[in-house]
Image (cartoon, rainbow, N blue to C red; front, side, top):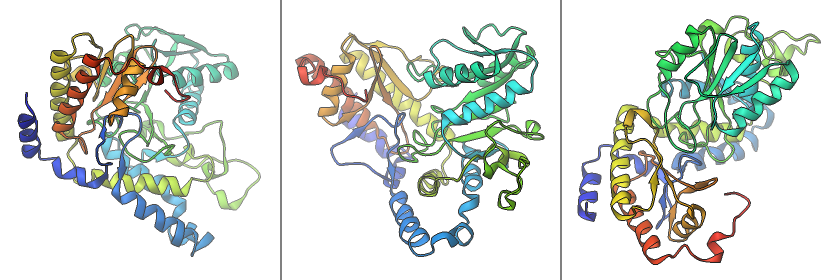
Length: 401
C-alpha cells in the first residue's frame, strides 16, 4: 500500500465526515481511544452551559428545571441501543468497579451456589472486586478457563474483549453455555460498547457493565453504566442501599425500600457535570450504523496489521486475525514495548503499553483515518530501523504506563 492508496480509502469512506465531530490535535495520530476516547466537539459547549447556566445561574433549582435527577436514566437510554439493550434496562451510575460489585452481589445473592468464576487474564479490577465481595460473603472466586463451567458456579464474570490481546468471546455461545450449567453471566463491555455492535438482548445476557470513557468518549473518569435484563429486574436490590436507589428518596424515610426496576442500582448523587459530558459525547453516535463502524474497524486493522507485518517482522501480533474473534484494537508484543511506545508518542503517534511487553493501538473509526494508520505503521518502522527507542528517557517508566 502507498500513501495514495490510503488517501483513496479515506475519500471513499462513508464515515469520514464523522471525524469533524471530534477535536483532534494537529500533528497527532491518536490510537488510544480504547483507553481514553478523543474529545467530541459537543462536550465543551455542553459542560460550559451546565457550569455557567445550570449550576451558576439556576443553582439548586436545576435538579428540577434541567432535570438533573433523571440524568442517569436519560444517558442510560442513549447507551442502550449501542449495546443491544431493551428500553429501561440501562442506567448510568458510579464507576465500573462499583457496578461490578453491585451486580455480583445481586447475582450471588440469588443463588445457593458459592462460586464466582472469571478467567485468567481478565482485567484486574474485575478479579479484585470479585475477591473483595467473596471475603464478605464467603464465596469462592475461581479464576480459570471458561471452556468449563461446573455446576457449582453461581455467576460468571467475563470481559467480552480482552484488554491486553484484543481477543473477543462469543457472547451468545458463552452465555448459553453458562445458562446450561445453571449460572448467570455478567458481561464487562468496557472494550465493546461503542466499538462494534453488541446484542445483549439477542444473546440472552443477564447483566452487563461498562465504562463511559473509552469508545463512548465521555472523558477521563466518565461515569459507568449497568445493564440488567428485564427478566431480572423484579426484586432487584443491592447491598449498596444509597438514598437515590430508594423508591422515594425525597420522602427521607428511615427504612430502605428499593426503587423498582433499573433505578434500584442507583446509589448516591450523580456527578452532574461529568454525566452531562458523557450525554453530550454520545451525540457523536447520532445516525451512526455500528455495523458500518465495525466494517471500517476491520479494514483499518487489515491496513495497520499488514503494514506492520511487512515492515517490522520482529513484532508478534497478539490480536486474532479473524475479525469475529477480536475487538477493535491491535496488540503487538516486543521485549522493548514500553520504550518503543514512548518513542512513538514523542513522534505524535499515541498508543499505549500494557505489562509486561505489549503495545496497544486502538482503532476508533469515528475519527481515525486510513492515512493515520498507514502513517503510524510507517513511523513505527522508522523507530525500529533507527533504534530511536533505545534512549534512557524512553525507558524510564512514568507513574501511568
